[in-house]
Amino acid sequence: MIDTFDDKKVSKNDSIVENGVKNTANITNNALNTQFVTNSVYSDCDKSIDNTNTTLLSDSQLHRLIPYAFIGQKEKKIINENNLKVIKGMLSKHELKILKQNWDKFCDDYECDENTKTRLLGYFALSDNYTKQERKSFRYFMRSSQFLLRLANGLPNRSICDVYHYARSKFNTLKQPKELSDEIKVQLKQLLSLYGRKWSKISEKFMCNPQSLQVYYDTNYDKNGEPYDRGKWSIDEDRRLLSSMKRVLNTDDLKQHVFTKNIPYKQIKELAEINRSEFIVANRWYKHLRWSVAQWDQLEDQWTHKDTARLIYCLIRYDFTDESDIDWDVIKEKFANISSFNALMRNWRLIKQTVPSFESKSYKQIIHFLYDNLLPQYLNPDDDGLKEFEIFFDN
Image 1: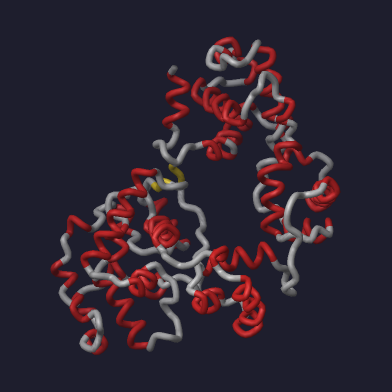
Image 2 (image 1 turned 120 degrees about the vertical axis):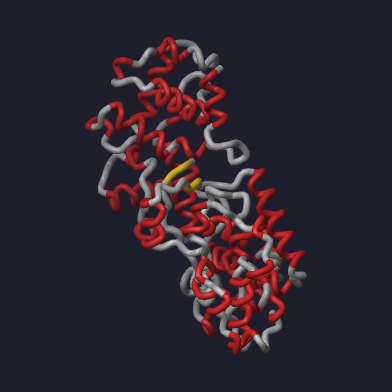
């Protein structure tokens, strides 16, 4: 979907881009620091600015105005002032193919070994294993080769921030926690006591993906290093979780929090005295309990969540002014599995009740809330945005 840019959390320890790449757009031959370039192992990159094949660089206005993998308030202002189109969400198969071609081409052109590839993707780039001179030299290599503009070539409406983070997740060859032995996992406690939560430094000991290792630890152990409960949730745990949510959110009706964001899961799990990670608690609510609370199991005629998304899209496209104007006979023609328009209307009533304070909202407010909050969950990343829904509506 197309939207303005949201906040992105960039790990300070795991990313080289804040200091290493942010000056891509401003670098010139006169600005180069020849003192460290001369002795650099990448000194053959001195001419890369003059010799770079411009057809390999993105000429997107978005990328030229924001040619680095860092988005702050200043960058958001640039996006809004220039009315730039930014596509968010998962990359399609076609986009991933373009990204892989760009990555492979860059690595071939510069004959990047595994160590260089790892550092290009922002892992261990500021490690103590490298001297200050080596770190400085590598940052120069990334700037002069215009790595980010090459990586984003052919993806004009994807922010370089998103492109870079996709490359990090897709092309790194680091180990995943499941590949580590039980003996190594035991060492995590010792390393945490030694380094604190500096996951890049800890992960470097095992050549493991730092984000994955952090998620693994936070999902399996509490702050004291004691293991969380795993496995199937009990009925009692679900009951305590829902009861705690009502107290924390100060409501007896959780149905209107089906799409609420920024729920304080840490506070909720502590109040419920559930020995599971904050991530697992959030996942339990998001993937299971909220749909039960919404009573969508009462939807008629084997109605699916995908049918709900299609209904919302149809209502948006027909652009009815008020709920009383909806022609349910016309809508029903698109849903062959529904036995009657009365059943369709009953399903609609259950769906709209998931909107916070729906009683006090207009039909337009309700349908646009559902469009913005529910529909994105059913967008197929292999299609072009709303293509699947457009086909359904036109048939």
